[in-house]
Image (tube, rainbow over all chains, first blue to last red; front, side, top):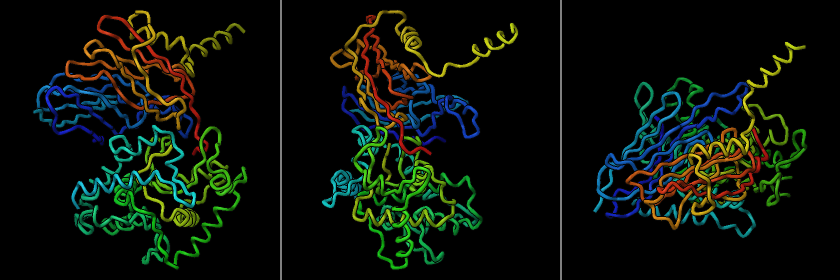
Length: 106
Length: 255
Length: 139
């Protein structure tokens, strides 16, 4: 169960641009580092992140090994109607994590 | 305490972090670049908060045969743990020696789960340390005036000024004489442990003061003290006293 | 002699590149732009010119002054990490401002290139040189 820190407002005005910030606890092992025994540490990164609002895409991100550990993303979404924000992270070794937040729009 | 009052206190604490003391002591925060400072200032950006959150859920997690939790004895940590981290290292009456916060937490957890804490529990100990230290954020460091701590603290002061390692450097050589100047492009801070456990960018993770001190010893090419050696707590005691009155920033971000 | 040369040649082929090159970065950029020539401007890359630590470098890519609906995708590339790509972002119908902030890793001092692909197919870039210092006390 990966830990996340999601900063999203619980409400917004219709037509407003809402700033969403997500932080995921993940080593983002690049696959280029060498371990204590001299062997290459295998790659283990988050490769994709996406956010949807009531099922409609806000953003889709492709992440590469150059993204820092405990990946942070900040982006902007348009408040059209209240409902559910969906956050999905996917990565190496079958990693998948999903979070949801409710947001009301007046 | 009302949420808004806590938030206001946190803001005051965070703002006060940036002020140097009249005696010239400055937190490592001030030696960092603007974007690293921004990472520490904002809880939504601070990766150390991930560990604080982990510690928060561990706080209420029942463990052991009797299903007890930290919350079972200590209740709401925001009240019961406020000011605690600022007073560590402290003298542990049961062990009859000084202990740091992590050791105190480990001792407590041992009471909940009498079997020895497995090596795999270390991440949990770190998360709890982050959570407890966070409750003292914004408070001045207040090392106790306990006379039982004095001998160890004095040994720590001597260690701080003792040349070590192949580079033959004492802590004071860099962190007092050269503080504010640069070593290989990086600014040399004054070495005040105001933000532990810290999210160190070099580690890409959270770590304790002990871990940072170990890296310092590697830095001067000295053999690190043995894991259970008294030198670690002696140094921590002296560093805490040296930073008395400076505001706690846990969890801090450092380069 | 001939057999040893063959073995050595095979060894060289098998070794991965220690570092990406400006050519590799150009190839990565081409895979994003589809071969459309880059023009300087429109996209903005915010990053500190001197970073505290190459492990965690905050960056922000934005396209100020261009209506959001006209910006389809953003990408960031680097010159000297083992891999040229840093991230690629596609905006959907619920996106507002065409901007993204994240934290990246830089192996050494190098040039970063931010690229915006607009709805009309044009591609715009900005290049920033970043100085990365190594930590003085390492474990």
